[in-house]
Image 1 (cartoon, rainbow, N blue to C red):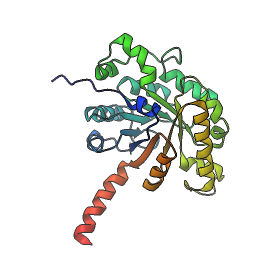
Image 2 (cartoon, helix red, strand yellow):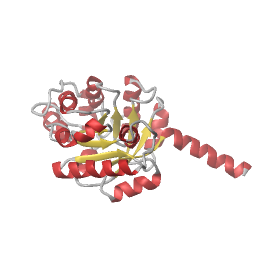
Image 3 (tube, helix red, strand yellow):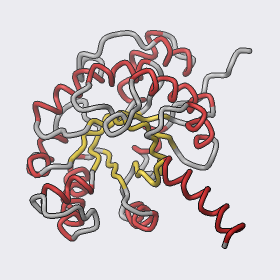
Length: 259
């Protein structure tokens, strides 16, 4: 049966200033992605950097999430910009690239994920066209604004270069990683995503993004922190991962029957 094309509005909502909460998945199972997508999350994001999700797993997951009527995002593996373009081809709406530490890194990321004049992305978004109902010419004209590229700021070098990274054409915004920021800023002494140095780094990143007129995203270390970050104006916020969702459900059920 023909499926009515769904509107791709994630980028539009972020640019309108909304704070959106995404689930974060590391398990390469489309049925889990489908089940989570049918809950109240604004999006579902697949983590290819720190998980067993490979390119095919991410593609299948994106399809499941899209079928459930939700936007799909991906954090790609380190420097896998070619893979990022392929994920956009099959329906991903947001791509997060880890360890973007310099303007050169940001330019490579933008080049692979944006069509000219912003980048050099190769033509091939047939699946995305099918999902949106757009013809080739209309898709070409709209693709750069319908998709979102977020460069992760998670090292001392990236923090120092954040203004220049944000100035790169084709970079739609930045995504703050509190865990790696804590490790780098505390010089490897400990993992502390709630440390004051991380709070200060988040403030610097937010200020830079606002000045540049670009988007923000971040990984929230707790549900309470996610709510606080939304009140501060952060845009694309990771609320919870699949492991916590599954473990939480199991623990809640067992607590009822076993006390």
